[in-house]
Length: 191
Length: 298
Image (cartoon, rainbow over all chains, first blue to last red; front, side, top):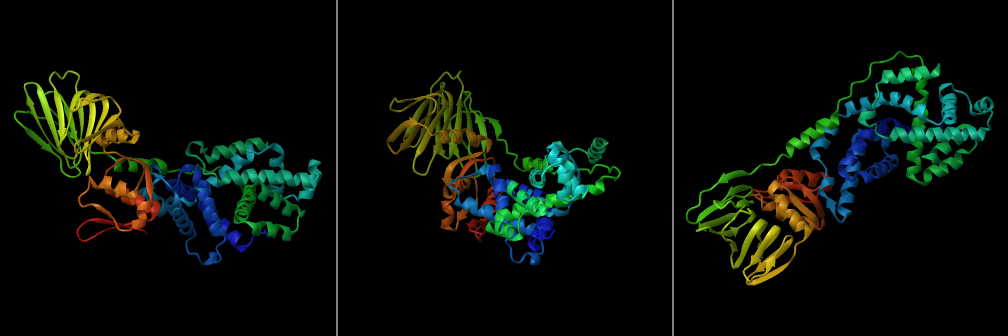
């Protein structure tokens, strides 16, 4: 995609795959309500990093930013609850197994993607499918659906926003559906 | 996210200029992040082309890491139960605890006494009347309704007569604090204290009033090895921990005293406090030559 800078490419490839780990780290350090905000603040530092290609371990880079930001917040806070003090032991375990986390989220991605696609509003789903899976151009989609190009644009934007938002959410343990079942459901619906 | 998706769809349809887009993206790092996330979703959907005709794969086996971690945390926070000892009283008896120790005993009249860290008491039971002296430290008392004689608690110049109920008594550096958790008691001057009341004795001076909720919570919680704070400074928190510690924790950096803490700490183990302080504030702890643990800003 021509509109992605090198730093955006790096951010997507090296930072976003570890978002579950970042979320966990943040949730251990600050109250749940602030965790997402903390991750976003760390992302902002990362995407503004001028030397991003020199960072040897992007995952630890962001984990460290999150930890430092949490320290700053705690020092500024009037009262810090013990319940929100970090559990160092748990954090070290999470830090020591990056590969397992990355592989796990990588595998879930495809299965979740199918599930998420199924949950999109019908028109947004149709547009996203035609544009990205069948590879039709926006103008062709407009003709096929009998819509204006700007309406197709709106459906695409809506679909992508929902997908992007849902993909940032860490999937809860209970909702994890086996890949094969998702795939069968997907196939079944296509017929 | 909606805004970023709008820009991507517009770029894709060619309905906006790259210059306008660059201007929007450069305006705020959050724009760049949201755009990268949407672009990621845009790319990811394309991967489904490959899925269309792929045979089903076995489900990846997920290790329940969350469950594992939780189990580990619980095991680390197990508290030490105080030993229950039945003590036969004849003349004046003594009992004491070392620094960090807690124990409980039951007197012949049925009164249960729990001794907190660094505490020493003595007592005498004479013709049904009991007298208990708190020489140092802190105790919790549970007096049964079946008590027939008179029960007196003394500490320095302070003296209280206890009815059935539960009470907490603590020798502070500057005062003696007596709390009524349940039941009733009388001060030596005849003032009645009911549940939730506190008497603070400084020399000959006795001040009686309602107790702070946190003081009551604290009096109930130390028996389970829990420390309760309500926004006190790190100085105060460390001082409370130090009652249980030998050698003690010393704050080397005065700036750290400004940190205020609240909530319930479920263990008096200093390592848990130290790792939490390190993880949450970057505070470093070091053992000095005399064994004391020194805290410095990271």
